[in-house]
Image 1 (cartoon, helix red, strand yellow):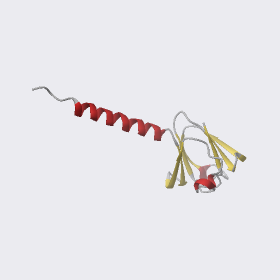
Image 2: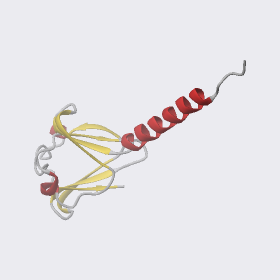
Image 3: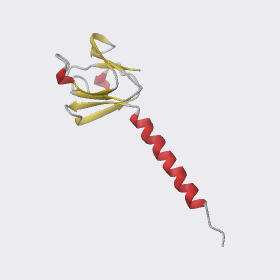
Image 4: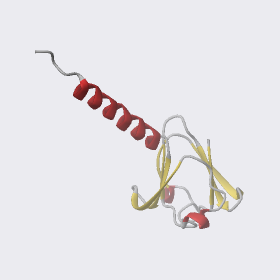
Length: 109
């Protein structure tokens, strides 16, 4: 009897689709309400001019920047005020004087 291959192809396609979705999410910068990636989270793959529109103005305490990306954090909306550039990694903003609960816009590259 000939073995059916459809279930294997279907499983392979589902696996590939799930890996693609996971990779797309993993490429996003994630901003967290509390230190150590705690509390509410906001995931973005693009810059945000005004964190107020996302309900996250002056609330960020930690951030994760994936490999291949870097960000510049800004104190005020529209990329104004003091800035903090960050490369790939996970950061508690409490470790950077004056950066806890102050983020109002972010440029993502």
